[in-house]
Length: 398
Image (tube, rainbow, N blue to C red; front, side, top):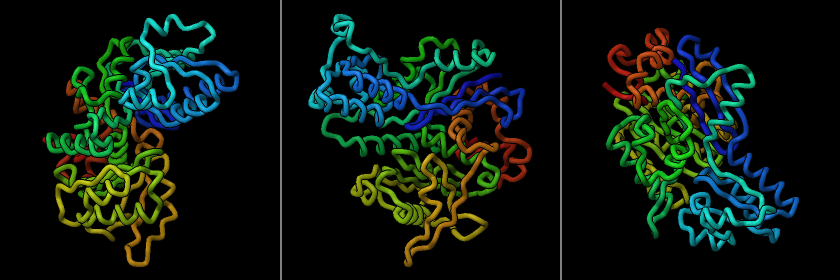
């Protein structure tokens, strides 16, 4: 069995080709620039050469590509965009127009002068991945599934905060299915409000295998739970410190006990330590995070998590995990001892392992082989639950 897992972040896209006949450590992997970073470089090149640009395709991740587009406009150069590509910058096209971008239809785009540089927006570029593997003699023609992770704020209605809207969505999914794989979907089951996830589906029409899409942060947390030291904990606190967002979950035998999400740029070591302590104690409030320009916090089980046992208090993963490595805490706060996991020997592929675990839930016809690879006899022996009857707490509960 072969499954292609693609975890798309702001800085990199991490790609893992799972083969059930191999040990997980021996499977093939790539860590390459993210789509938004690649688009940024193309826009910068157009800016240097003084070319107008047309942005077409689908909604994708912003950040670097948005900043490059803004710099292009400040240079006095023209930017055209089709509606779906324009929603990369804002779901409200009126706000996109206020940036100085001219919205054009598909027909209008075709009539633009040939001198206009044309850039296609999409997060998931299967043909490029296919060609890269083919260069090394690896065939991606017969995949049993493809699973892709992206971060999606969702399309908030007019007048509703994007931050509040996303957190309402997180709450709804957890109350419906208290498991991290609740944030993963078959391609035909993506909610209409999750426009970036749907854009991945729309840009994967060349696939002839099942497609699963998922939010990146829960995938990273689920992947971190596959580290042997983390698996051995009955209750555990895990934070994914991403380039833009920090999402922390408190996990227990029954699933998700609580969580908070903040913007990484607004979180330093001491603030993160305070938030994690409050999550561990069950006292964190949604308003305190939201009013600090974060997304919010939720508690489903307010019983405190015992700290000080074992050799760590919190698990920290993600590309900006180093902001916690020098944490000394404040005098009035307990210093949280961090563990930095590397499931199956590779921190960079943590999200891909989480995508695989979620795919086993979403596509049960593939579950037996995937779970046999992810949940080895050694991991089952260390687990504080009955691993023969109950899957990983971050995964589906039976």
